[in-house]
Image (cartoon, rainbow, N blue to C red; front, side):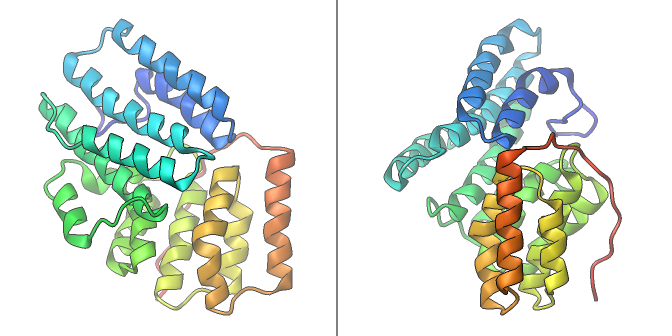
Length: 261
């Protein structure tokens, strides 16, 4: 492993098992994501991985299975699935590495649950989940999800931390877009957001889940702050139509920015 305690994206098994699921989700094609997930479950035992790594992968795949299962489903069903999956994460894993991944993925699950009205995790609960977690300061996937929770509840210090992590350790896919997402959230919470920030965010939109999350979570706050006009409304709809009509292949970019004073 490149970092202690981290499921890293350049591991061969990640490319074989997780990448097909993630690409299907980015393309918003649920049947493909479901097939990729089922294929991953079947292939894990045949990869010759140690027991602790297999246990860790189990939690990763459980998370992706949950995400796939709730797409397009009514709220009551999503709440039921969330409760079922959260219960499976409530017991310690057998290995230290497996338990680290359980805590990491449970944090992501609960952050996501808050955004969809499935969970009401508090700041002390979040702090307890990530306290003492090895590699937490290098985990962009974790902080990408914590940022969404922090924005929803107005925790500016966590958004600043997420900003720093995504700036210095960008994802291997959509790195620039993920950074811009957190930047937009941080500027809104700090009262410094501008129309330029919104335009930059729209330019970075590559896949449908990104822009749909932006419209659901960030756009209403932009409206509340008086930043949205007819021109920006039209730009948002144009981005959605462009991605739906001709979905591009996600590419990662590295960029360097500074927090606005």
